[in-house]
Image (cartoon, rainbow, N blue to C red; front, top):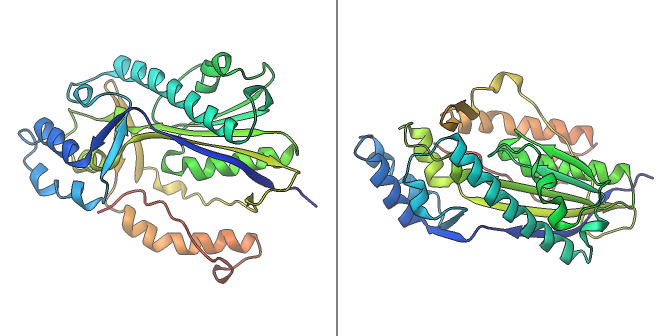
Length: 280
């Protein structure tokens, strides 16, 4: 019998700067409204999200100035390292483990570039062993958390008894743009915040919450629907209007296909948790 990975601990962390949605709308209006006449017609997005507040690695004033790659990257490295260490320490403490007990670290992030990668940058400060296995994952976007959990669970299952730390960390606010006056960027300004989550997984010794199975579905002809564009100023968000209709049409069949490979059906599932990637 194959030992499935069990959840040993779970932790979350947010950066120190909290922004209320009304404050974000006010700031976005001051930056965009005069140069983008459509802004006011889109401003209702900020209320319609249902978001009350979000967090950022920089104070609000930082986002009102135009930034380029060097400043964004420096802000990413500083903020991401602090957030990584905080959420990792919380997860290890809740599992009654030290950094020396961690055998594998999976780092998921798509909002900044770090080479050496984040877990390498903080390894000495946290106390990871020199032989710890590192698995940095970039480019999964909104799917990063669940895809990272799939990767981490399979790594834990492959080596029963070892401790796998998964850290999913995104600093979306650092991609705010002053030069791209588009609906996609207004949507991004109304939604995105910064934060991190971490879990520790282990296979072979039971556990109440287990990762029973994982599956994925790839649509290769959808590269222009959602993602990043890259230019000298930084990342630029790509949101196509077709996202909601695409999800409505394709998600059900994709889930049924994944479940069938597990010899399950929709009727076998008691609850679905879905992450909405964007809105009309």
